[in-house]
Image (tube, rainbow over all chains, first blue to last red; front, side, top):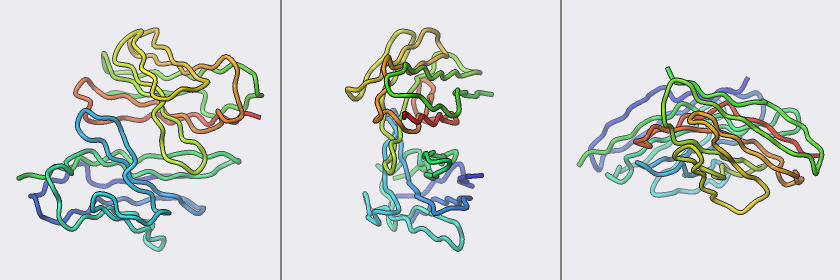
Length: 111
Length: 112
């Protein structure tokens, strides 16, 4: 069964500190992974996808198939990074696609 | 505790047939409710959101409609399905503070 685990519910750091939001997945096929972000009182939006291998707002995430992880990292956090972050796995099954979300993690960046 | 349900889990429908997907939330009152769709190979797209009974906002023009007949019930419908309606549909809710989204298990729709 497909599963996405975000082991930490809360993370609080000071501005300028590095952040790493952990995500582990369980999937027998070839995974496609995403990070979504929800800023306060806004709708959910896509932050980045592993297949695009890009850096968005200073965030990067590398897919590690050996460790089945897709951790989100930023070397220097900013206050505007405070938000809920969701890791998600796209899985094909029976000819159709399904998106599985982790439970999310709240990042707070303090001044 | 709050829970969110969606059904059916999987649906295969012919082109031109009607659609009704249901989402219900338990354990909370006056939630904000959302319908998302994930088309093949893409991220989530917000289709509709609702802040109260009978209040529906549409994000993108499409073949679908949404209704909220009760406080904790959100329905996604179509009168005539298109092939392009195939995808994975997720319902989500937030409290009035709107800070955290909680997702349902989703419905896989295949239109043939």
